[in-house]
Picture 1 (cartoon, rainbow, N blue to C red):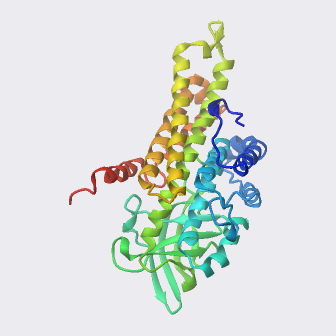
Picture 2: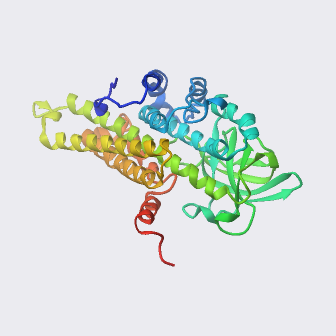
Picture 3: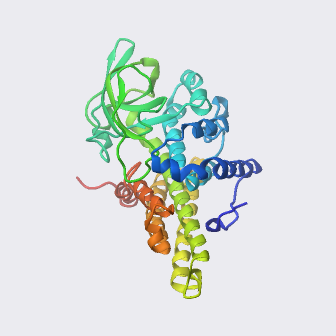
Length: 390
């Protein structure tokens, strides 16, 4: 099934439907995504029409209930779709992961009426979502967020600023965590806010090292009025909802990291086969062969780890520790692989004429988003030895 030298092991997929789905995704990636990636990333162009295509193809709601327009696919399959999309262009793979994350609160904690009203359009109606937890002064310490929602009759009025929001300014809906009670995690509630709500505005997109095609911006809430019917879950449950979403979202980032690493390895292998020095291909030199072997091993190990976490999730078992491990390992591996890919290409790898310099810049971001890798280590250590002493 695979066309990638970095993906030389036949994938173990649970059904024929899953195999056909992955073949469809590879075809879309080859025809529609990869050919435009370099030019659009350099120009900072977000491919909104591609997301409309993905929505029509049923790829924006894969892990959710078919009753509401989802694909009904296990995470084991959904994550491999993300890997394929990210291997073609990280902006697309990450965008699908963030959209899926933004649907999680409604799908998992909304009422039947809320799901029936909103989920079909979110999952298959061409809409694009944003997930709004972080703030300028609340990143890793997300429970310290200050954005506040105050009840006013049968509505809530939201004021504050969210930061580092993927799809900020272009999203059709936002899942927003806001403070409705006292300090700390228990005072936070989740809301589903329309992207065109009055009083909601976006700052200019951040000027980033990489991922230039994916807009990241602050969102300002200035008296944004949200009906009570758009509160998700119970009052004070928002932080628990946010953490539940992040456990799954970290697996999305892990899969994207493997896709990015695989793309970098493919470029390095292709270059090593063609580039000649001292009268023969540089792929003949043992030092470089060992480097490629280490890169390939990290790709395979990363995929095995994120799939193990996905299978635990699909079985309804505790997967938070393994998800943190997958996010940590896969994104660190992507950083090493892309760095080594630049080294394989030498001076050419340092130029924008080849994609590996872009891959290197993009890999750095993956070590930061949805919980820095230092936070992943905190999560893993707590599972091992318990919480820190106070």
